[in-house]
Image 1 (cartoon, rainbow, N blue to C red):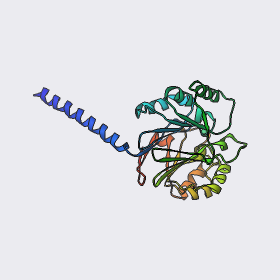
Image 2 (tube, helix red, strand yellow):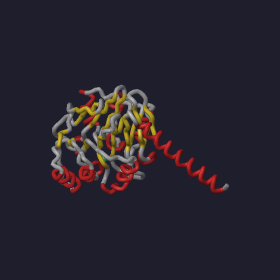
Image 3 (cartoon, rainbow, N blue to C red):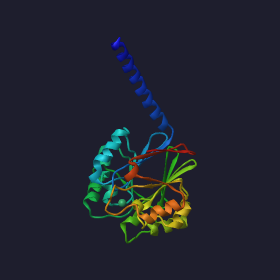
Image 4 (tube, helix red, strand yellow):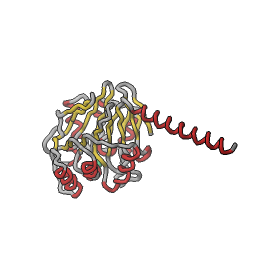
Length: 278
Ligand SMILES: [Zn+2]
């Protein structure tokens, strides 16, 4: 009798598990998924189009390679089609050589700026070996993938003092939903962007890990997001996100999602509604 109950229990567990698996996959089907990947202090964002193409925007620091690999296996990410390296700082490009080496990346977008760090050299080496041609990321360039529009709003100038302001800023539009990814762009770049582009978006990945150097009040008012995403590590050396940024977001009733507190977060967008999974 005991054996019988045990068998029933096992069969029940198998059915229950596979049913759960199905529901989870069904949730993602036909929707745009926006993954905010917890890679400690750094940025890593991944967009899955409704037809399962993947665009990775930054890949985090090499010190946090294990976190990225864990995420990729957890969500069973098999293909990464396009890569955007917002700007050549290590906390953004540190793992992109790994991605280029291990995935069948078709295109890489980068702003026209170089630096002489090891991580930048590693990335360039991986690009060369795969015979990839770099597409320049700058304001006015756009591409479409499965009905999703990816539009670069920055950089707008050829020269900046700070590498952060070379950040490729990307607006992702899917039907009535939109996401604005700022890289580490600071107020100088924000002010150039609002002169030229409609920045209104549901989700704002704030610039420079929530530093006070980014997310000006006028800019935030124009974006007018429901959600703000801050990518930063627990107890990081920079005090990110800065108090001023958090106060401003709270003043405008923006819901804040933080990788240091929430870990990896997934937004599911159907073109109208947005669901958030922490
Ligand atoms: Zn950064």
